[in-house]
Length: 189
Image 1 (spheres, rainbow, N blue to C red):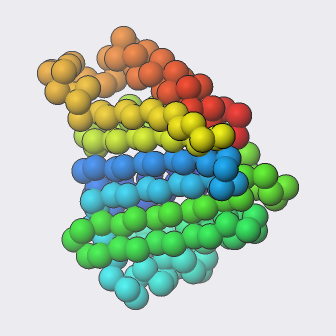
Image 2 (cartoon, rainbow, N blue to C red):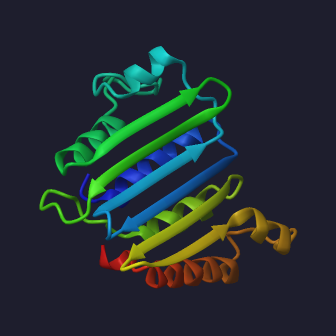
C-alpha cells in the first residue's frame, strides 16, 4: 500500500464483504500526542477468536475466489502502523461486528502519507450507498480541537427517493468532505 487511505479503503471493503449495514470511521489527528489514529467500526458478521487471529496472518484469506490463499490487507496495515512506533488492535464478535484501531506516530519518518482521503471516502460512500457511513474527523493541536461529522443516514433521510449517485448529491458529498478535511487540517498530515 502506498498510503494510509488505501489501507482505509481495504478495511472498508472488508466491512462491506462482512455484510455491514453501518460503518463508522474516526480519524484523529492529535499533534499534541503525536498520534494519527484510525478507528473503523462495522456491524458486519464479525469473527470468532480463531478467525480473528488468522485475519492478521498474511497467508490467510476468507475470500473464496482467490487462487492463492493470501490476504495482505490487515497484516500490512498492522505492519505499517507498528513500523512507525504505532500500534494496531482488532476486536470482533460473531454477529456483532469488528472494530479496528491503528495508531501511527505522526512525525515518524517511516509513516506512510495519508493519501487522498476525500476520494477514498467519496468512492466508498457513493459505491456502497446501501451502507450508512458515519465519518468523524478530529484534529487536536495547541489546546484547540476541530471536528467534522458526516452522516449518510441523515442525508438519505433528507433526500428521500433521490439516490446518492445523483450528480448533484455526489457534488454535495464531495464538497462536504473537502471542507471537512480542510477544516480539520487532515490534508496537512
